[in-house]
Length: 396
Image (cartoon, rainbow, N blue to C red):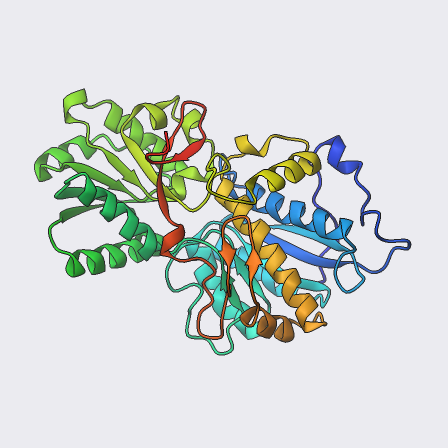
C-alpha cells in the first residue's frame, strides 16, 4: 500500500500552518516530491524523532521558498516505527513503493538502523542517518550502498570519552552498557581503544532498556575502586543512573562521562537538575549555543520564523542540525542528478562538492568509499547548563 501523503505540521503551531504549502515560488501546484522520516515518534520522553523532523521541515520550507527542486515542491512524510526494527522495516517497504519519495531518514536507535540497512539496499531506497551511531551502519559492505550518515560513530564517541577520562587522569572506569547492538558496538570500540592506548582498566556493567533499579551501582563502583563512570545509556535509564549516583556520599560520587543517548530529551529537566549539578559531561557534534559555527545565526533566524519557537531551547539539537544538513545535501544531489531516480541520487551523493552546512563546512561530504559525512573532528565534550542547554567544555 502506498503511504498516505501528508505534511507533518501538527506540532508546528498556527504560525507555521499559515505558511503556503509550496511557498510563493509556485504559480501552480505541481506534483510534490517527498522526504520521509521513519522514526520513534511514539516513544515517551524522547524528542529525537521530533527534532529530526523539524530539521527536515525547516530545510524543506526554505527550499520551497526558493522554488523547490526540479520545479516541484517538497513535502515531509512521517512514519512512526515505535523504536521497533520490524516495524521500521515494514514502513520502509511501504515507503519504497512510492517513486515520489526521494529518501527516508531514520531515527536514533542503532538496532533499528542496523536491521534496516540490508532492506534499503535491497530496495534501492536512499537512507539517511542523522543520529544512530553504531559503527557498521554507513560503511556496511553493501555494493552499491544506499546508506549515508551524518552523525557520530560509536568509535569516535568512545575516543572522545576515553580522551576526557585520560585528561582527568582516570585510570579505573566502571562502564555501563545497554544489552543491545548499540552497547556491543561501544564495547568493541572501548576494547579497541584501550588495546591501542593502554593505561585504563574497566569493568562492564550491563543493563537493559527500561531498567529503573541501579541501586547496586555504588557497590560495583566501590568494588572496582573506580575513579570514573562511563555511561552509555538513553534518557530513560540515564535518569535512574544519575539518581543512583546522587544517592552516594558526595565524596564517593564518580565523574560521569556519557554517550549522547541521554540528550534525546530535556535531560536536565527529567533529572530535576542533576545533569547540571553532578560532574557530568557528554559527547556532542552540535549545539545552537556553540558560537563556533558560522551558519548558526542565519539558521536560528529562519527556524524560529518557520517553527514559531526558539530552537535554542530545542531538545535533541543534534537531530535537528544533522537532519537539516542531510536534507540540503539530498536536494543538492537531486539537482546534480537532474532526476528523482534513487540510484542516480545515490551516485550524485557520492560525487557532491563543497557545501557550507550548519554542522560543518563540507569539502566533499561523501564518496564512493566513504558514506560518513562527519569525522572525529566534529565530536566534542559538553556540559549541561542550568537551563538544560549544552555548551562545549571549557567555553564558559
